[in-house]
Length: 341
Image (cartoon, rainbow, N blue to C red; front, side, top):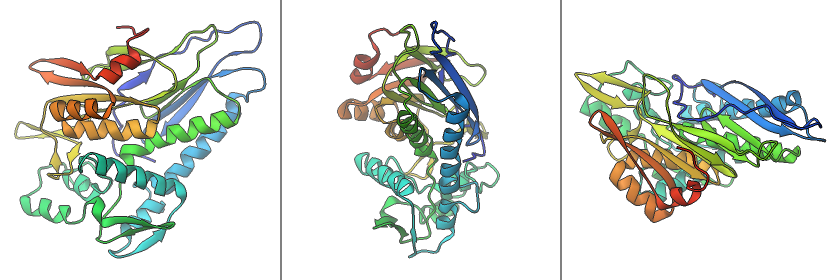
């Protein structure tokens, strides 16, 4: 799946030391381009586990399948075909795509509408979608017209079919990368790989430890658009990590900054001071969606929501020329032990 702009890779994997013992056990690595950004897989190769060439072939087969099904940048993808279908139509879909729609509907219901997979007409209108026009502020009439074609309430699943009541368009980019990470780690497990660090466009998951017992470490970057600086370094085992931010994908008009993150309630970019939010969850798919959801809610409502729902989240809010960080209790419980600053 290709994106018009590179997704902000905020949580990044730290370089793995190639440590090993007298046997062949060691850290292997491969990667490449995907979804307008990159992916990488680091794993511990022990006796009986496949080599990197085999695993790269398996991984890229998954990436290709996701692209064929879910890319809004391919006219022949299943989701593009569905998006072109008229109001009142249904289309047979594979289980994978229906799984993402169900996940999106659940997040929409849990958050009272702060998450929505049907915002592509609005993303295009503001200049951030696959069929984007020039980046500029739309008129109130344009905004109202686009909003008529959005809303999870107009989308439903009937058996193996996906149906829409209005001429809406799906965009799964807010959860597709997290889903893809889960698909890759599941396949690694089937092939006997239990120690890995997988990164797809900045969505990460790690399990086990490197040879010698060292943990996988990932860095949460400070929300700066001029350089990359590690803000927190975490030890990761069994959790997915997703970060959403508004500082690398935006435009400015008449001195006002417009983020690519849209609030489904208004159809317009978020206007609060939350610069980024990082979420840890056993499911990278859910972490991916939750980071977007919390980014929409903002620093106060987002933190309250995350605390109430027991979400492990790390918030970075603008404060003048600097930033203020806040974490949920679940985040501190998860990462306090062994964390590096």
